[in-house]
Amino acid sequence: MRLQIALLLIIISLIMFAGQGSMVDWRAIQSVAIHSDDWGLCGFLPESMILDEAQIELINPGNFPPVYWTSTLEDSNDVNELASVLAKYLDRDGNPAVFQANYITSSLQSTPDGWLEYDIPEFHPAYQRPGMWNAVNSAIEAGVWVPELHGTWHYNPLQMKSIVTGNRKLEELNNAGLLLFPDCMSAFELGLEADRKVIEDDLDRSVGIFKDLFGTLPHSMIAPDYVWYRNDENLWKSTGLRAVQAKIEQRRPNQNKYTGHVMKMFERGIRRISEKQLYYIERNCRLESLQHSDRDATISKCYDDVLTSWNRGEPAVVETHRINFVSTDPDLQNIGLSALDNLLSKIETQDVTWLCDDEIAQLSKTGTSSRIFGDQVICRNYTHSRRLVIAEINGHKECIYVPAREVVRIKLN
Image (cartoon, rainbow, N blue to C red; front, side, top):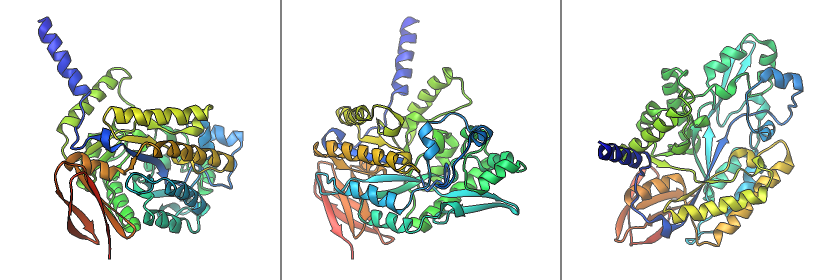
């Protein structure tokens, strides 16, 4: 009996800590991906808005890091400065550092005549950003900026409407561009309280908005507030998404704190073993420099985590939210940008390979990958034999032979 229990516990442990496996040796590739959430989000407040204590008490959004009280939508200068830093650091193949910006596609505004919806590239009137999309397109062409999908709203729109509608003070704040509302920190876009039909419609809408703006379908997804469920993953697969970010950070607010955590780990292990279409990409390094008093220690810890990830045979995936680079306080922006600059300068000395999620997912499953940016396509083959790499160019699939353990760069017409 004891032997049977011991074997059962071993099996459960193996499932809980199971990985998806990979066709490549990440120790040799020494790759780094940079994840950044909340781009395109109209919030938390416009640059011109200053809240007094009574307004803050009225909103009562819940607990979140104080730095987010200076959070706002990015502008062209924010994107250009970030792109300039990324472009300085070239990897072993001569490619610049890649910044994966995860986008929110829509925002809501209450008006006397009802609620209005804005879809990127359009924004709420309080968040006009002339030239910003030109800056984004330039960064994409330069190969330093890869857009991916974060969500539609970053909150449950029905809960927002229910709470704000009829409250004159909240309506005034929302009209002025404030994103926050009472209990918004628990109004999860993909929470159990959300209507499934609304979730399905919003996803279809977001994917369409994304494709119209960026000219390509999203390949990777990170759920707002890390709250999502299996039904959501099935929906993502139906749209052609290939990667899910931060599975290990997945939250289920309605579960028991202790047993729920164990069940989440067990379910995650099962999904890693059984899932064939989606690839789970874990964030194993943190560069949230504005949320810690000792910022030098934060940079050093992130760099050490990059090295540790490689030693474990994993791609290093750095999490760094938009708030580190976009703020109503210029001093905070400079601190965040400097921290990234410092980290990249350390990593560059390690013969690094900069990748995005789509490349990581492709390489893990097949040992090969392709990515288009600007006027070129980069094809990678990290297997031990010559391989055919399929790249989608201008809507057509092209077959490119790549020698073993080599990277081929091809100019497009």
